[in-house]
Each structure stands twice: as C-alpha cells, then as structure tokens.
Amino acid sequence: MFRAMWIAVLVSNLGGWMQNVGGGVANNVLSSSPVLIAMVQAANTLPVFLLALPAGALADVLGSRKLLLADNLLSLIAVSVLASLTLAGSVSPSYC
Image (cartoon, rainbow, N blue to C red):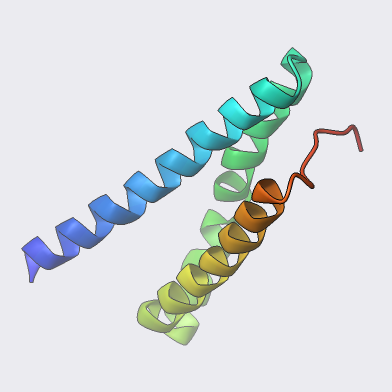
C-alpha cells in the first residue's frame, strides 16, 4: 500500500512540476518581461498558500478521498483546456 501511494504521489508531483516549469518556459518564450514571469510563479504558489487551510477543513468534512478525486479531475480538465488552447496558438501573455 505504501509503495502504491508513494508512486502515485511521485507521479502527481512530477506532473505539477512539469506544469510549473512549462508555464515559466512558455511565458518566457512569449514575453521576456520579468514581471510576467514572476506573476506566473506567484500564480503557481499562491493558491497553495491561500487554500491549504480551507482544503484541510473541507477534507475533514467531505472525506479526503472524494476531495482528492474531485481536485484531480478538475486539474485534468483545466490542464487539458490550457494545453489545447496553447496548441491552437490562442495563449498569449497579457496584463490584467
């Protein structure tokens, strides 16, 4: 059981790391602005900082298995949409 959990966490973390690096590289290719590159890194880490406590409370209420499944499904959908938009050439950096 431990080995299966360890492999699942490793694969999940590798995917997250690849997404972080890919986002930074793609942003660097699209724009060399240091502000935009820093904003990408902040956007990668800020949700963890802001949502860690509420996610823990939600996991206690709903059950961690259901929450993890829903989170991974939502992440899969978001990454798939972003990947298809990037492949279509519709992604560009912009200031909000």
